[in-house]
Length: 94
Image (cartoon, rainbow, N blue to C red):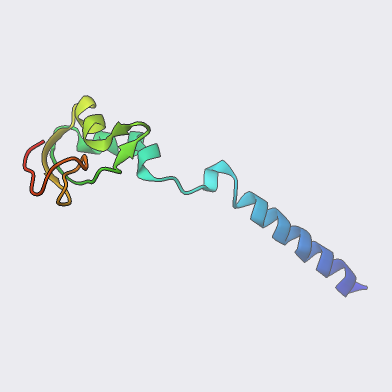
């Protein structure tokens, strides 16, 4: 009789744990959705970025988002075609 009780209890516990693991509080979010956590740490500092043409927060490029937020972007490291993907070969500057 004890075994019959333990098996359903374990099954219900496993189902509960898998559902609980999917709640919004436990979801892993990319940094693009957590800017309030780290933008304050970048204010007043000189910032360098590794970025390419896919570096977006919502529909705005990361570089533009940082600059609009008052963050001092001083250097961008990007692939051959630039951080916006439109440069021909080597491109320097923002």
